[in-house]
Length: 175
Image (cartoon, rainbow, N blue to C red; front, side, top):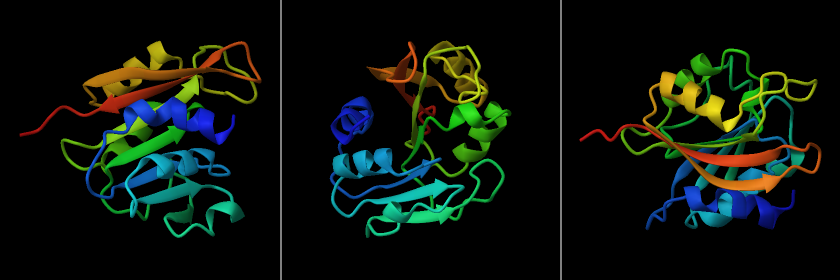
């Protein structure tokens, strides 16, 4: 996937704000979706890119702060977040509901969101050990306390017959 395709996949999930935002990209990999997210957010926004492995290309952008960490097991060194991006990272997590509940604690109360990007399949393989189809994502996020999951984009996978979907997941509104 190229940057314009990544931007198109997540753009509907980014609510326009007049001020900069703070997001995390967990399981950031080489940073394709960190770059896509940063290109959509207001100037001055910050992305906390979290990955198990050092990512040299993420360490040179002033608006992307790289953290070498395991987003499932480690306490994340991030402030309160406006959003969390999970691009093809949840399918590596065995205890998905527990992981989402832990990540939820980093979101701004009432307004924080998660954008999930996954293969729309329930079939496991070596590269996708714990698949998260859109139907399964609805169940996982409902169990984790989220009230709304909406598919915001799809893209044909170049590696699999399955499509890749993007979903916007919201918390219940708290007044």
